[in-house]
Length: 227
Ligand code: FES
Image 1: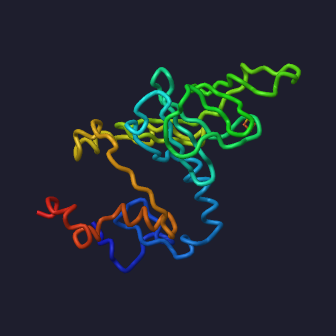
Image 2: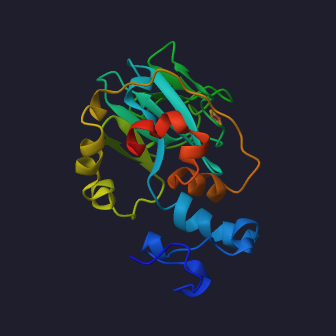
Image 3: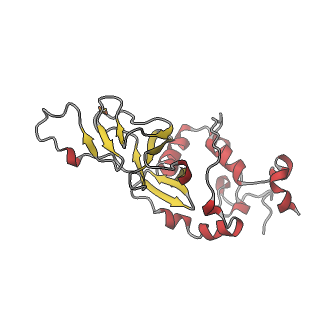
């Protein structure tokens, strides 16, 4: 296997599907608005994004909101205990429906703007002020669903209805995870900490994904693996 540090790049710009042949991307990939626009369309709006764990929605009415870049999504556990995902946008005048995480007091999502109300399956149940609108058919109006996939209790959404399904993308991932963590499906969320990073998102992902720094900075994390 060639050294990841060999002097000669094997592909233009450092791109290579083989991690042992890939290089750090050219600098402008971290600040060029044109690159970021491509990432918005091809990555964030087109791929499966992790949003949370089933244990974070413990009972009917539990909800969480997440931003996939500029798009707000809400996940809610409905009265039959099924988890559903919707764009967090009212069908009336597009007001944001919910903020943060929590539990709904009633089995309904009520828009804070004009109080249109949706049930937890996304159907419009009450449209305040729409009584005088001719041929207004409440039965045809629902929150826009977002594709949702569960993987060992971890929840992923995909904003693109035409993107490959999660199982296709995941491939043999379940077996791979099971080899390292046979009890992964029994995990639950014990603590969540959120903090902003003043950096391009790839800086964080790249540093997390390779572990050259682990024996130095996170020795406790890798002690067993180093033996
Ligand atoms: S924008 Fe939601 S009820 Fe009007």
